[in-house]
Amino acid sequence: MAYSEDEIIKVAPFFGGEEAVSVVRALMKLGDSTDESIAAETGIRINVVRKILYKLYDHALVASTRVRNENTGWYTFYWKLQLDQLDAFIRSRKRRTLKKLAARLEYERSHTSSPARTVPKSASPSKKRWRQHSDVRNVTAH
Image (cartoon, rainbow, N blue to C red; front, side, top):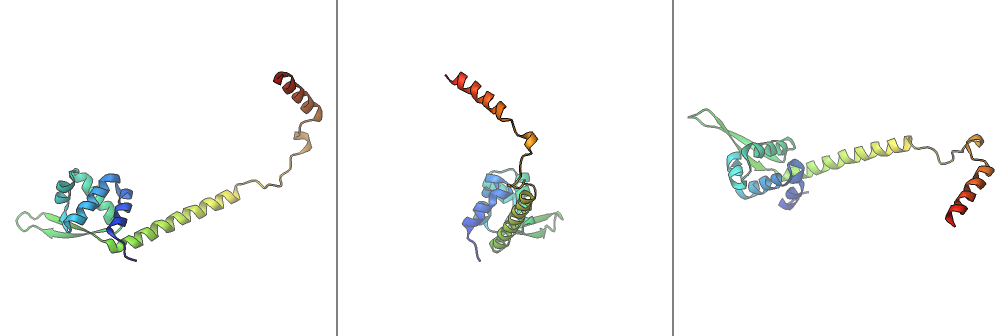
């Protein structure tokens, strides 16, 4: 199933809130771009942009290409969105949530008392105490 750009915008907050949404929008607008150009486009500090890109990369929602500058020897990374990986990410999140819910259900089932539990006679209040208690209520209610 192919997802549109709207769906990646809905998923982006998982990776850094509104700043992640801005980063994703910049990637959609710029196409292949460096973290510096994304930071300039969004106005977000470069270290925050990099954190978001690394989180997206960890979930395969962006890809990077490393290019070496022959003069300086430094590498420049070019980032691009991988919308085709969004389906796998969403399925993975759904599976993880389903496992957590199943574990919680099992825990709840194993830690609830049975509804047929009876109270021992020694623990139940006597009729005399009930009458005394109700008489006190009736006096204070008038």
